[in-house]
Image (cartoon, rainbow, N blue to C red; front, side, top):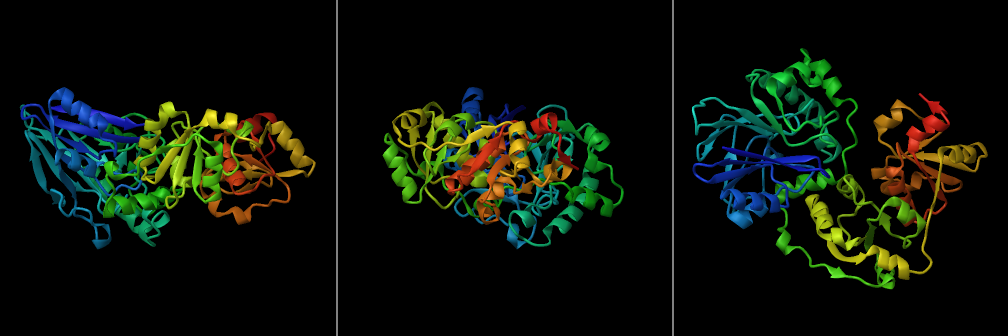
Length: 470
């Protein structure tokens, strides 16, 4: 048997290729949209990818199952659990098998047993894997998807908070309690292969270790320590991070059907700053992907700034308007990687790109904003020149914040601009200075220019000023 682990750092998403080396057949579990790595492995190991397994309808990335089907003719193995609202609607003309609790299927000498594990979503299933190519007659591990993570379990409130399906948080938490009881009955030696790691918004305390065991999670996972349902539900629903807006889009895309990458628009290279300004005037979106420091010193007015780093995909999903054409300003050496990242969360309407540094060199009347230290920011507040806009998550704000700070989480800022006081200078602040720079660009792109970004964020403020409201 072959088992390979693939991890997308920008999405904190794990997928797996499982192959029977005797028959040369393999499947991909919870595949990412960019299937290049799976193709390369299949060629290297002389495997035929015959199946794509999905643990649930994903909310945080576009599934690669349709790409695999288009490339290899793979069969899709997907859940038939949950009510009518959570049935796959994109399977016409595609080879597939609908799965329910207790079902079993084989790929070569590999046996997959289906376990219905609702809670994160109603249709969620897990796959118990047994390798019958040797002497084993019992499972060696379980692919849990977004059910059980290392140190955490899947949040049950996404359908309510992201997809606006009311009442599902409480029922999901109740289902999760029952699913965990089933999980606890599994053998301690079973390996656990989850679909996410630290940094994912699908839970609140995910560990960074790639895999775990049932026994370890029973002993140390906080969610496994409850005997009564009411206490568990309360603990599970408390302190969950804000779900990105794009989660609702992904739920719909993965349920109804995504476009194939080969059918997406071809990109046009733009070489004139005037052309970028014209696009902005037409209402198009332009995303400047340079580091925040470079953007703050000079940028084309109206552009958004999300630096291309490990958090890029998350913030792009929060802030980019899915309904508007998008153009990119970036180092063209990372264009292909940037497109993979954007398309992984369904940002498909990308029509053009430009070499950012070249455009900045030729552009006239570049906009900018000032970066200030916490000490300088404090002086501005004390002189009544400015106020603090805290753009961190709600849980971070609740744990401690600067006196009299206004709180608007950065991802929601574009929809709450009417709440921003523009009479005074705005000191934009987050935990370390990265998210506040993104927020500053959102404000600037919407014509709010009287602002500064506080470098070092709340962490540096505590060290330099320590004017903290608990």
